[in-house]
Amino acid sequence: MIVTNRIKKYLIKAVLLLLFSATLAGCAVTYPEDAGVSEETPEKAAGKKSEVEIKDSISHLPVKEEIVLDPDWEYALMSEINTGSATLYRARSDRKGIVIGVNAGHGTAGGEAESVYCHPDRSPKITSGSNPTGSLKAVAVSAGMVFNDGTTEAEVALKAAGSLRDKLLEEGYDVLMIRDGDDVQLDNVARTVIANNKADCLISLHWDGDGQSYDKGCFYIPVPDEIKDMEPVSLHWKNHERLGQELIDGLEKKGCIIYHGRIDPLELTQTCYATIPAVVVELGNGASSHEDSDISRLTDGLFIGLDSFCEMYLPQRTRSLIKTTSSGYLIQVIVT
Ligand SMILES: [Zn+2]
Image (tube, rainbow, N blue to C red; front, side):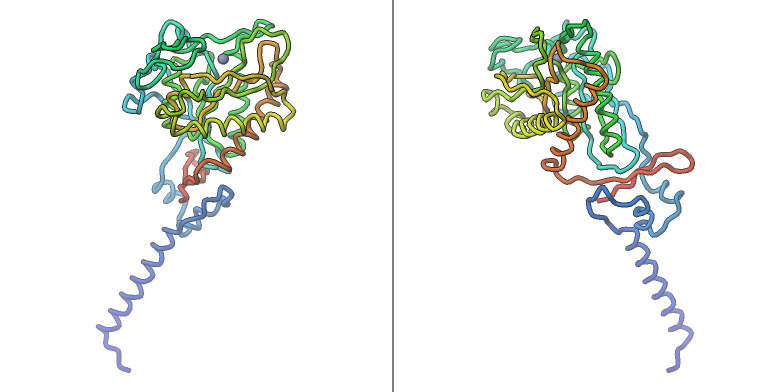
């Protein structure tokens, strides 16, 4: 068959176009939502693009980022103390694409001088507790209890939060540390709202101020029946309870003391404003040991509970992979 130069040119053009389309298709390859995808996968996905090209085409994310309260977030304007910031830590490897909010209870200077509405709709409190039924407002952040040896709850909670953060990061979870130092100027509303917008679930670490001389053990604060119809509690209370139960199961697996006595459900600010699974855990009381080894056992137990909760209840999310380039940038490749 005689092939004219014109036809030849046309055929070459068509072949080139096909090759170009195939390359583009290669770039658009997607991956299963599997945290265990190997590190070289994104490069394969990008059609073996060079590191520089990858760096140019994706977002650069720091390993540590300060998060302030955005006034446009739902309920943000209900907070009174909000000049501080939380810290978002990103895992460097084996990334799960899940952010765990860890709130070291208390630790806000001046927190007891301010008050916040108990409910986002400004309706009065339904149950009695530290504030009686009918109260419109609650203390913005209480000072917390003091251990029998004189150590403050805020100090021990921070130590436990740091220990939990390190374990979570090591296993590929990102961690939103609501309080990352001795003091953070964020009240309980601001803490919850930041977590609502930046984390997938939230746990707040506390020790009970019951004044007993023996270690009471761990428990979580259940949601009172009286507020289960109130928004946003109505949409989330089942997950709050599931998260609480998973944490207690995890603590039990690690041999931590579990409290089996009567637990009064509380109408906590966090519970009333949370739009993600959120729970307050009491990891003992003033008689509990807060030695490093005991704190580590508690945070091992919390980790088991969190890991199990995320596996069972958190919806599948976009997973991401992360790697550090030779220039020191931390880059994230989104895998959908
Ligand atoms: Zn507390």
